[in-house]
Amino acid sequence: MANKKPVVVLTRKLPDAIETRMMELFDARLNTDDHVMSQAELSEAVCVAEVLVPTVTDRIDARVLAHANPACKLIASFGTGYDHIDLASARQRGITVTSTPGVLTEDTADMTLALILAVARRLTEGNRLVKTGQWQGWSPTAMLGHRIWGKRLGIVGMGRIGQAVARRARGFGLSIHYHKRNRLPAVVEHELEATYWESLDQMLARMDVISVNCPHTPATYHLLSARRLKLVPPHAYIVNTSRGEVIDETALTRLLREGRIAGVGLDVYEHEPAVNPKLLELDNAVLLPHMGSATLEGRIDMGEKVIINIKTFADGHAPPDRVIEGF
Ligand code: 8YV
Image (tube, rainbow, N blue to C red):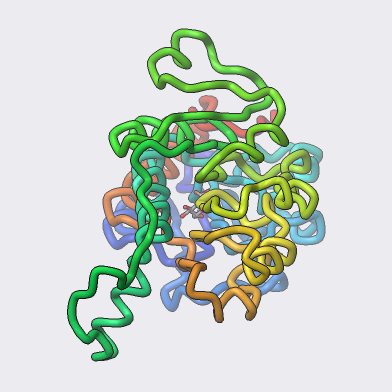
């Protein structure tokens, strides 16, 4: 990249401290009203950008990338997941792609535990009861949820976030089980006191709580398919803070409505921001608006990572958080 400041296009509004620093370092073009860019706007953005900073709300597909300025050589995504970017097209065009791994692990794991507790202990129902003035006072049989202490937690995908969930869950007395393509080293399994299940089907059939913590890839699309969801015991809860596409949302909704799954805690959806309308009607579905990593600290850390990736790249070095290299 030449000596002048690179043109960096931000598709969404980022925290003030990050935008200020980006304006000092780069020729940064901001999205001040934070609207979600259309595909046409994204195409225009890559046409002027030397570096594009997209987020999960942008679909950077082959058609968008076809408009890329030949000088556009870096997509420095603001987020850990990169399933919104067509990596094959980026690679073909010699565009390097980076993400922001590591800095939202703990926040997302916190939210996973929050969802497990919220579903099992009916937090949102209780909150609604009080706020709508319908609470008539304590009763021995009111608002009964289920204990999580002593139950089995099955983690689907045991990467950084899955392991952070496991560490927390042990503190809540859950026994840890996991399924992952590649088994963890024995020393890590030992530290987490985690039991490995090579067969996802077998694990799902024996858990009390299931947490989805794997990324969305072609291999994990509908990993929790209608067939697999039917293996889940009717008393079990499912939480997902990863990507909606990993679960067949239509099948999940149907099984919930039929009482064949006890409850769900979802932070992500298959077609977000759209949510299956039938889910909205269910008391046993705790639904959050993709806020697993939404802490100010986390967003600033993510922004710092984006800046480091761009700066390193602009200075002629390999950026640290490469998903693919375009050179
Ligand atoms: C981010 C996420 O906030 O990083 C991810 O993969 O799912 C979110 O928590 C979002 O991706 C920002 O682009």
